[in-house]
Structure formats: structure tokens, C-alpha cells
Image (cartoon, rainbow, N blue to C red; front, side, top):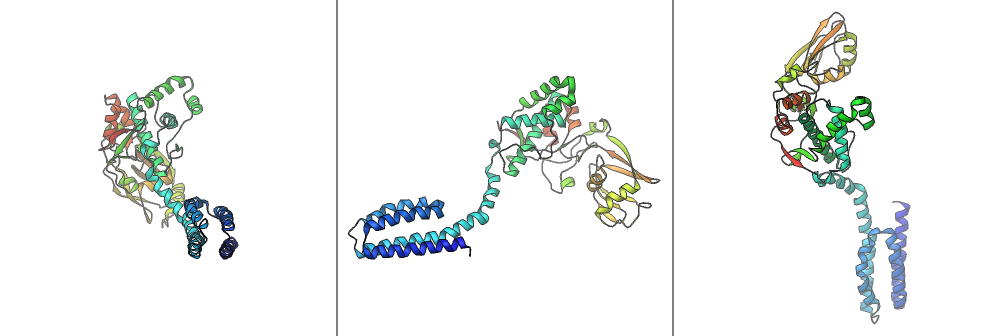
Length: 376
């Protein structure tokens, strides 16, 4: 038991004895003064003591009566009630408040922040920075609008998940400040910035929802001809992230990309997953399973089984849709597409915009069964 708690108990013992003495002396004025002083002291221990002030009138009426023995007993009973509340219930309340209730309150706060609570000029300015970093300004306006809505939706969902009404700058989206935009675009800064700001302004506050909730609006640079289903990337099936055709992606620059990595480097980077049971001189790859979209789900490297995503991340490959071949002391990887492959293909969005689709039609193609809502 803490010294502070012992001091509180001694204080209330003194309080009770003092009141009993005052009652025995039938000093009504003394009781009134004592009550006022102790209420002030109790308030120092209990910030919520103001709740008890509603009892002040009954106390005054008891003290202001004829000072009968019955009245004294009633007063003593009420005073004991004060003591029980302050000594027993108050510490319990404080324990609950400091020991777990606050955590629960934070968890509930995530559900209390609605999508209408997160819109702000700062959010729209942030989306300008994201679009400028994530998509070439040379892409068609409808593709830029689709990117703006996807980026805004992704940000709003992350803000809700975090229980935050403030814009979050570290949720996994690229972002260019004005300084970075000027450096990247040079003499084309004004034209490019105006084009992107126009796309953001014309979709102001617009997000994608599924069953009334902001979707996980992921996107990637280009697929291998089909986008990937969410469960093949994150092991969680989302009804709006299905595999859809994006055939024109095959014509995107560097859609098929070849890179060569030494066997030693491959061995060094993959042995962290477990015992390969093969040294770098005889290390082998055996692809076991691919998804419908062509992305590797399972392969065997030496003596361990890995996912295509694990190999892609460890080796820095452009995609988990790849072929691999050993050539001497190196491995040659041929990748298809760029990125995880789920959600909207940015190159595919550009192609669909050139074909005459507006941004909503583009988004409905890549995110199945969604609808639109405006939070502005």
C-alpha cells in the first residue's frame, strides 16, 4: 500500500473523529465550518467531488435544525456515506480509469470517427502530393482522377483504422512536397501541378466504399495481364479485390524485365528464411504453384518452401510473377509486371482512360462492387 494512500486513510479517520466530536458538542456552526473545510480537502483528492455538491442542501437542513439526536444520527450516516465513497469507491474508480478503461476508450474511438469527420483542406493538399508522386503527370486526366480517388480512399481508411482525424503521412503511399515537385518537373512544374490539382479538385472529397466502409484501395504500377486477388497477396480475401483482366499492361514499358543476381547474393539473402540445405554452388529453384494471374504462390529453394512474395521482397524483384534460370554462378530472373499486382493497375488505368472510360468506370473495373461517397 502506498504512503500516499495511507495518508489519505489517516485524513479520513481524523475527519470522522472530528465530526463525532462536533456532534457530541452539538455545535452546529462548528459542523458547518468543518464540513466546508473537509469538502475542500476531499475535492483535492477527488476531482469528481463536485458530483457530491448536490447533497449540500440536505446537510445544511440537518445542521440548521434543532440539533436533535435523530438529526445527529442522520448526519453521521450521511457523513459515513461520504467516507465510504471517498475511501473505497473512489480508489476503485481511479484504478479502473488508469488501469484499463482508457485503453478501451481509445479502441472504441476508432469506430466513433466517421468518414465525414476526416475531410479537410490538408487532406486534399496531401492527395495532390500523393498523385504527383504515384502517377506520371503525362497520364490522361481521367486516370489522374482515378488515382486521386484511390489515394484519398486509402488515406481515409488508414485514418479510421488509426482513430485519427489528422492526415497521416506514413501509411505507405509515396508523397512529393512542392519542393520535390519543382525539382522533378523543372520548367514543366506549373503545367503538371495545375493538371494534377485539377484532377484532385474535380474529385474533391470522393472516396470508394463497400458496404458503407472505405475500401482498402491498393494499387500498383502494372500487372502481368491480370491483377492479383487480395488473398494471394495478404492471405485475406476482400470481395472488391478480385483478379480482373488488364491485358494492355503487357505492352507497358519494361513489363517483362530481366535481372541477373549472383548465386552467392541469392544464397545470402534467402538463407535467413531457414536452412537451405544447399550451398551457393548447387542452389536450385523449383516453382510449385502459381495463382490464376500468374504470380508465384509457392516455390522450393534448396530445402525450404517460400512464397513468391517472400522471394520478391528478399531479392528486390519487380514482381512475384517471374521465371528463374541458373546460368553459371548467377541466377537470371525474368519478371512480369511491377508491384504486388492487387487493385488498380496505374498503367491499365491510363489505357482505359485513353479508350474513353471516365475515372469512375476505371475504378469500378479494378475494384469490384464498390460505390462512391463524398465526404466533403
